[in-house]
Length: 208
Image (cartoon, rainbow, N blue to C red; front, side, top):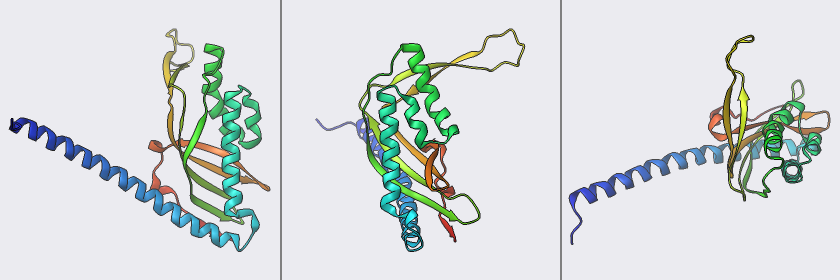
């Protein structure tokens, strides 16, 4: 039986949508790859000036930080992550996890793996703070869980209750991490979901 005109039209629409989605994905990936290549050139230039910006050393910092955060979450010893993070970053990272522990008495066991880790921007300046950005993609081997938090939406003194919101801790993630230099050590300072980051704002520069 020959497929009907309606079936063919539906198939073509599906293929067209898939093509559009693939185009956007490749466009995004191409921007990230370009930023990675650019940052790699800057890192290699910095390696000639100082050992502190050695590429292997920077990736060791990234992976050590990542592994420590996972250990802290799995073993519910969040404080051990403080050694690798700025106070602001630690508060932002630990708050939803502490809420999950408070509400459920525990965190669902999870083991996280990185599928992609690239330095995509680096800034070295004698007169300003050094930092670099990393694109990290990975997944957790647990089912997503929901953390319920109260968000103050009414003016102080209002009799209306605050609104409860649900934050979903998913099993996949794509994030940008920013590491800043304080004295002789880099610390994780920001963790931004991919959808909230504009890739074009990531720029590498050197001023030594």
